[in-house]
Image (cartoon, rainbow, N blue to C red; front, side, top):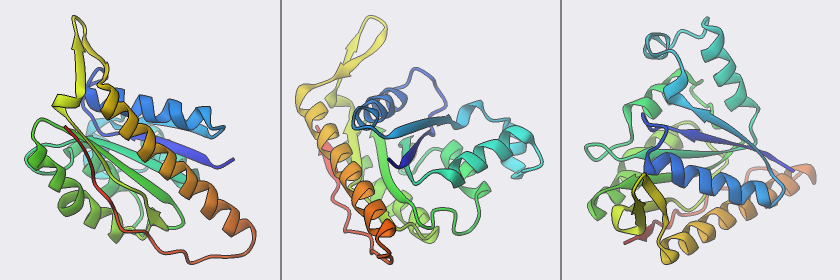
Length: 199
């Protein structure tokens, strides 16, 4: 089965973004995929900002990204764009660092207006890196998240069902394109992104 890298661009280990990514990763693992995780916040900040790949930890993260067949990129939406953490990490990667890979963009935000950040903020960055395909983007609005005494307590049932749908669609695409590559069929084009808004 293909290897999928789940990348968190959240500055917090207990954020809704991180939790949504964890749910997606668990869903993918349950389908038999090997899922690796990378939290950008754990990388050395100064070296990340300088794109200093001589740093072993940053070099290892870039190598982990390069080795993946597909990636899930999760980010909170700040000021109508992806997090600076995620953008800094993407800037470290080669110009066409997504070549041959399938991508699932995930985002969380407090306003439904933030859903536009996926199409107008993150998608152009991803497209510039030449991915093989970009699956359906998925946006989780704060209203789709259940809160408990300790913070995140899960997703509302409708939101969880939509996340499963988006994750399964991504997995189907990864598996299909992996099989076509094994059969010698290449050059699949990226499908149109359908934004899944969870209110």
